[in-house]
Length: 192
Length: 213
Image (cartoon, rainbow over all chains, first blue to last red; front, side):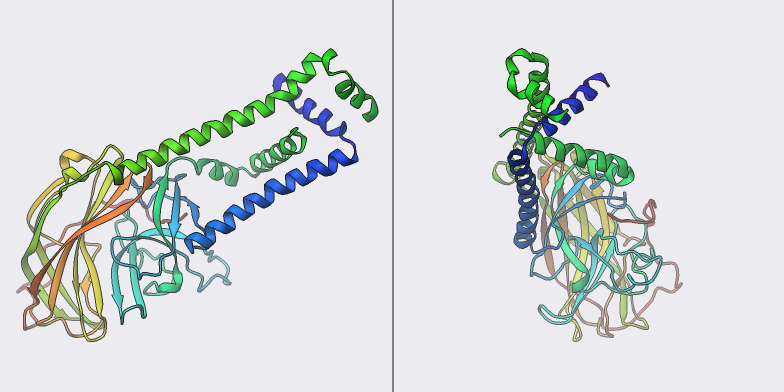
């Protein structure tokens, strides 16, 4: 605790010791870090074609393949979905009604009907650890099949545990603000 | 106050050794974390690369329909019920980076309405290399899956059976492989077993309702 207090005190002294030019420079530094993170994220979206290229698993319906807190990398291919592929889908048809959120879901395609090549497609999904498919399990919330527009991408890569940080930050917002504040302070006061 | 602070920290750093080492600490921690995560990420990428560059597998698979137990007309389209003979030796697919194989048996066919119909009828998760030789005769379809068309055109329709396995890694890229077998055909007439509702099926052990991320 004493070490932390001294650390913060040092950071604070570093901060108040800055003159206007120094302040401006460090402000620019902070902006640079934030914008490069944004650029990397946007570039990933561009390359993968998926609106959220990296997602964190929130539930155990794909265990033991994916656990809560694991990270998945998505790719949005032009090829139509086929059975066996793990897709991430989002149901947005009832998002304006209260009690219906549009959290993305990662499950495996188990039935596919496609009218003509590249045409209208009907997809049924199921979680590997679930007893029922998603229509019977009530996940589709009123629709019978998934279509192309529901699919946000297919899982191509897997990184265990790393998403735990995100989950902790989601569950305890105070940790999130403390961490963001601390990181910002360090960037602000670091001497390059 | 600020002015005084500036003079003590900036003006004579050599006289304030405690202050100097104090401000170096977060920078050191930062570079340690950056270095550590870079090394970890590189190891993960290299590990995943061995799956594609080093690992060689020789899976042996055969599957054929054992018995078509029903072909019937449903309200939204024809449906069928089929058991299969499956022999899949997937032991060589396991590498040191394989967490599990998700094996599925899928029936595919074309009808006037849809040029592609794919229906998974049986799946299994295999987490252990020693259990990766799957051998079942007259394997019944599982409860969660249905084999159906969206039109009434299943009779006399040729179909393929595909065994596919999704290789799910401990870390890195996923990949899927499959073997397809063709030359099968649904019977020419609708029929159900003499006692309807007695179709042989498997109930997988249930778990966990919802499913999000």
